[in-house]
Image (cartoon, rainbow, N blue to C red; front, side, top):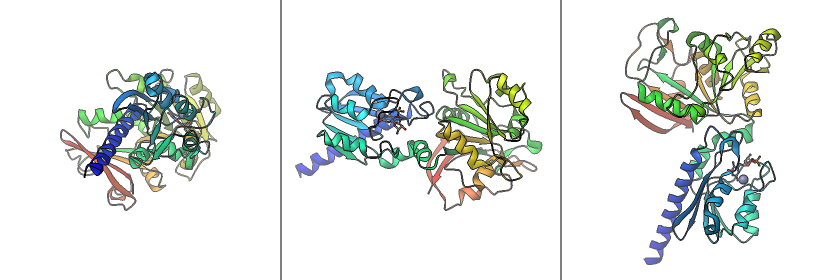
Length: 375
Ligand code: AOF
Ligand code: ZN
């Protein structure tokens, strides 16, 4: 009947506006750390009167941005927001208070903020002011987008995204560790976009010595979106002549070393613009990974992309520290002697695991991408 039809239309409209808020929020991904990338849309009488998202560095928050654009039109309007508006006096005043002051009548929030300073108090504050608050629309999508914030708040470590590009025969490099192109240009551009959407990107010293990578975002016009580059380098072997060290003044370079690494090497790298982070030695085979992640989270990193090599990838998988996997598959086999994607671990450790489920799939020319998330 007519009543049910109206209710359905209203629900569909809510979903459309929340999906828009989610996509606005994603614009900030990779550059709002230590804060989450929140999107906000203000709608009055079915018309969008304001849009906003968390700004680089994490402030201003998303809601004041949308409110500023809406101006007087916010009075009596509905706010769609991808995370509970904050209620605490942090580095910015509470968004909940700004929402109340602007005269917003209804707030639709995707998910509650797990930050103990907020944790439901934002919604409570809005309700106490007489605002209708609906929580939970597109909650799964919001949880996926805010995975870094949730992980960092709850477990004091970043959300870890492992990116792998493997040939049909499961290799990531040719014999002798020689780097080869596994995927084509379109897939590579997608990787650069993922770099831009990550707070930091991590590789092992082996990869630095073998490939001398830049680990930046090389999409046109997006150089400023390069993530912090992180190298696991327990005894500080990274060469001063490497591209990473030479660009350390333009794009941050954090070198993670053991507490035992030589002070002189640390001083030298520091003078070149790199930051040295010391963590305890783990097992014989390397640095203590949980300590590494804890240190990165402590510096504000919430979305960490791990790009290799195979030993680093394998150690993250073995320690169950991988939350999301971007598995690119190229079209051409590498053949005998190639480097296995996960070192001694079979790729089925991911693809056949009950611990992961497929989140999405995409195709790029001859290459495919499967994104896995924790089941
Ligand atoms: C929002 N909207 O866009 C974001 C929020 O240090 P502050 O004052 O900037 O507060 C940071 C906290 O605020 C952060 O940990 C998270 O709980 C929340 N982030 N909240 O209402 C936003 N980015
Ligand atoms: Zn806020």
